[in-house]
Amino acid sequence: MATLLRKAARVSLSGSLLSAGGRPGRLYALSYFGSNSRNSSTSSKVKVDLDNSSGIAVVKFQGPPVNSMGMDFLTEMAIGLDKLELDKNCRGIILTSAVPKVFSAGLDIMDMYGKTLEHYELFWRSVQDLWLKLYSSSKIMIAAINGASPAGGCLMALSCDYRILADNPRYKIGLNEAQLGIVAPFWFKDSMVNTVGYRIAEESIQFGVMYSPADALKIGLVDQVVPEDKVLSTAKEKMEKWFDIPDHARQISKSMMRKPTIDRMLANRETDIKNFVGFISKDSIQKSLEMYMAMLKMKKG
Ligand SMILES: CC/C=C\C/C=C\CCCC/C=C/C(=O)SCCNC(=O)CCNC(=O)[C@H](O)C(C)(C)COP(=O)(O)OP(=O)(O)OC[C@H]1O[C@@H](n2cnc3c(N)ncnc32)[C@H](O)[C@@H]1OP(=O)(O)O
Image (cartoon, rainbow, N blue to C red; front, side, top):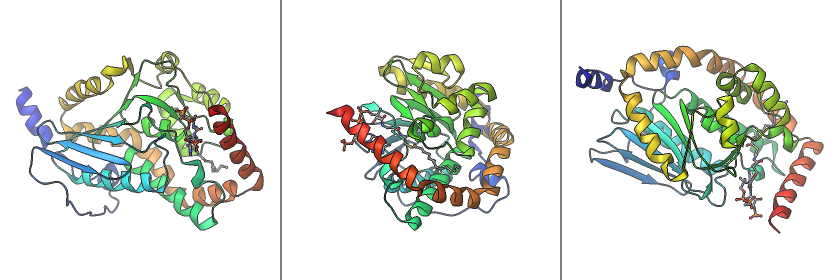
């Protein structure tokens, strides 16, 4: 019976939940995925390794020093996720980091500082695009969080179906935007509310709280805390459990849960871009970012 279910589960719905929701999907070349038992692709910031026999793809962030989400990272992630979304051999995706101590430092602050309005618009569209791909993926998404995960890093984790955090008190996670003098947009907030509930999100976002693993587990921001050397293996074990559920049933259930949040973002996408560009280009906000970057550098010296 279990084997039958696994076979049935292999017949997955094609495309992300976005296309399953009746929106036009896009086609991308499948150049690097052949019929070998393992397919790897490395670009400068992201490594994708799909094991065809298990159906698990590991997407590793490899942009030292802190895996910040700049234009290159956003583009490479978008391409990698599109390819995996279309690959029938892939049933689950694990996000993790190859950079010691950091999962991702979130959006690259240098992409939000001292640039043109056109750059801000393009950058924000790319951030939205990555979130849409992650949040609406038809695949099982597990975050194997093996380092600090502030702001955009936390958002990537929140977009997954399951979160495993390494048990190291230095690996804090949260939407800390308010601490930088900027504001987590509504779809960051929605992702947080959908995970931890309204009351906790309300406090969390206003204070820009960064949670220790123990606290993140307590509020449900992560689902499991495990020793650092077990993060990836636990993610793979967990994935096998998710694989027991037939894909079509899981995908439709996922879509049912996430569609209202995705639709809200799509309906407000252009306004959100306008808000971002207007907000980030303000002198006062640019000053806050400048001071924050200086503070990060001072902390080092
Ligand atoms: C009305 C509202 C409408 C719309 C909304 C409008 C706008 C706002 C939306 C914006 C949403 C923003 C989301 C974000 O993700 S913002 C980014 C937030 N990130 C952080 O605060 C993390 C900052 N970094 C850290 O805390 C630490 O670096 C970290 C990750 C814990 C690692 O610590 P450590 O290993 O000690 O490394 P260093 O701090 O020494 O950093 C090394 C190096 O990297 C630089 N750096 C760190 N983070 C970033 C970053 N996010 N972007 C760019 N650069 C970063 C750091 O300065 C060091 O540089 P150096 O040159 O000194 O080597």
